[in-house]
Length: 103
Image (cartoon, rainbow, N blue to C red):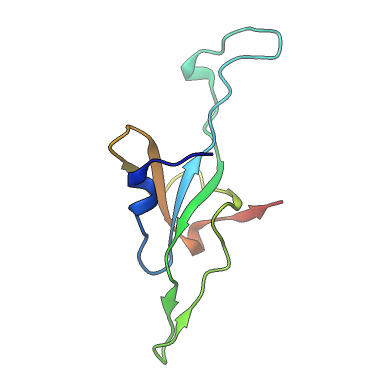
């Protein structure tokens, strides 16, 4: 997967994770085009960038458990939509909002 220069320069703060949602299935195996309203919301994606981590009560940085390139399961609602200069859509989530890591 190639990323634009803008996505490479975007570094999330604290425990934020930048995710690119997977593409919705628009056509069946038989070639039937699925209407946009009938397509389900995509609830998984790929981690593009991660922040350094959050601070604990002693002021130490707690590193994230999610790394760049991980496939993750996302909540149905939440996150902040980010559109970069090449019209690609990404979402920022807190690490605690991400439901699971897919293997």
